[in-house]
Image 1 (cartoon, rainbow, N blue to C red):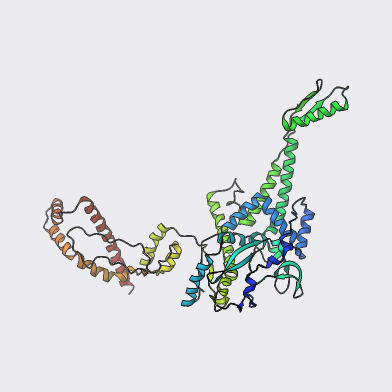
Image 2: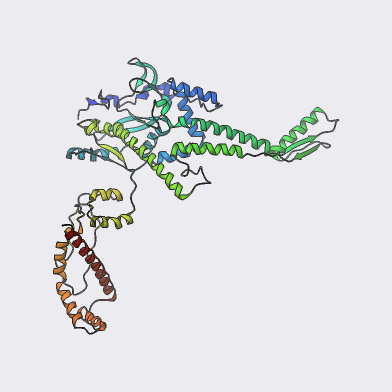
Length: 531
């Protein structure tokens, strides 16, 4: 298969030798680069300089700041982990939504098998969601051939600090280097060599649209409060220790006494020369609640920014209730669904289309390429649907079988795949058999939800043939019996081999049949009234 004239997502041709070597393998200066950890000694003025530099095009310090925030602040790390892992879902590759052809359906099925061979797919998906907090994430793809197909060998996350942004008609991500291409500093990203996800947390330029930009100030204020609280506890949490020495004490004696005071404070043990005195004063009183209040406010603000609320995060322990938590959880689902929609677009463009195009499975280009779908739809309550669907069908609602399967999270049966079905109800001994026996449905076919009114004529004909002789005997017995005991004895004679359990089962079936017959009559009358 010739693949030397493949067009990338931007419409430019690429050659297969470009796929065999990762682009960053030639940029050793990035691989040797060490981060500077700008949160060390972070102050309001230093933070403002970092943010201003990012708006002027120097993004390195800002993204190193974001890395430190996620590493050092446990609350931010926990909340971001919730949001990111909510996007790790089951997935499938589907053909184009509008009128897929047989070839497109077949290509989608083959692509799903190829995508399933991507190594550590869930880890890759987690790395892509790094864009949620930092604005974008770039994963480098290294390709290799497997049984005639081009497939990703590795998909590796690269730090955001490796990239620069070029402002033109639209912003362009480039690898940082001293190379000038088309009059712009930095190397353009190689087509099909990168999985680049841009997350829209807010509108505007990418360097200002990152979610972490909204968290930097609460991170700073919280750090100040934590430091102040630690200093408060060091000063007010330890009793004041006073050492007294006689007037004749030498400088050496005084130094010995001072070391003893320090040793007692940290080790709860020490020695002093004879004649010296140690006194312990009660620790000074103070209230640490002001620091705790500030830290709590910062964490609530962080939870609102990341998850859209506080009652699903544990940051608001006093006012949390189950009802309010459910409401806030719905907000979380909205954010999750938005994240998933953005991920579907990126994974379809940079992963599925890349594999499809290189392997000749997208002959009509990106517009008719198969798509990757993360399944964010939650399955419905089976019991509620089992109760509601028959009633909806009875009043004329015509849901499709495919829709019902999607709502319930039950996959459609493939051809020749065994499926569950309603088992035939055994008739009592002596009852006539024949046309009333249930017929097995062809394997792989899907039943249609036909309204009961349309089914009545054929059902009535089949039931009448199967039960006419039996009902005639019972009717004659009831008409000739003088009391209930005679009916009971007559039934035993008609069906002498029936056990008590079989009688109970037959009675249950009779009651069900009576209820269905009543519904049938009502529906038939309604049908007659409405023409």
